[in-house]
Image: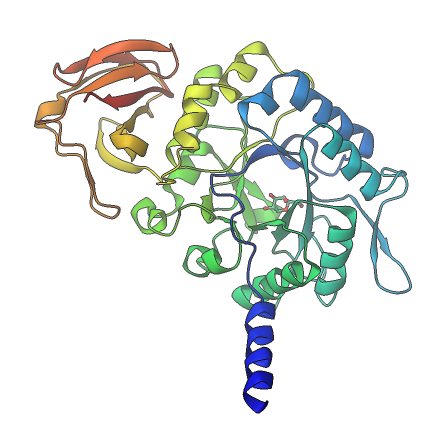
Length: 405
Ligand code: GLA
């Protein structure tokens, strides 16, 4: 009898042991977030319109599923401590909004903060983690971005662990997005806690710039600055299905040139980064939509192996990146970081492209790959001949290498 009781008790202990929700985000999450373009100017009307645009533009068909409300949706906590949305901008409430988003076949994301206040000075979740998680589950939220403002004295891993456990206890599978800007090396502990973690501070819609904020207290970074901020070889070993490095939401369509938008998008795909659009998708230019919905580029990002690409070489500020793909294929991306055009030559048979961390060898001497240009959607010869190409300034040449069998 005693044995049976013990068995039951240990079974209960094991099954109730908190963990993160598995089998979520097996490929990098794709969606849209309000912050980069709208900042605090959010409302239920905007969120519904974004959901409508996601469907009518074809972005949903291309794989974008999450409609994420960032900071400033918050109203006040009630007398029991439950958080409510700002009644002026979200008069119908979050559950009604979630129902609308779900009726479109999309998923709803929300935002909170591990500290006492969000970065936009709204109520944070500190001390209310379980209640907030319960509220999000009741609203049928599907994604939580959890920020790191006003966290003085908190331990990052511990704070994110508390929210992970709270979400798990609330019982609704929610993608957990860790947003502490890479300060405490979340790639080292984030895999057990969340599904993605920011690796850098906030992005800005420029290719090469650093924008000073609050007298130098913090900065917003251009695409190149974010690419260089951490050692990619260190980071990439921590990424994979269900746990991704997040170089921040995209700025495609927010003011860079089309070449720069394309390079930004291509590099996020090479990095197996979450593809969270940050522009006004209700009114984007066709060229911007074309970039965001490029199915061949998206297939590289969403490849089922889930391997983050690596920088293979740099010559005259032209970087060559490779990414192993399923079925023996590879992606290659030549990123021209000069503002002016460059001619490149790449002789495959003399290059030794090996991913020592994940154990892949392109072996161009023995293997032949056919080249497929991801942006022109055209075949581009094979690896048996050296590649010669001209790449405009701040742009890319991105190709899929299909292994010939
Ligand atoms: C931080 C985050 C941003 C955004 C803002 C909202 O800066 O890094 O992505 O969520 O807060 O205030």
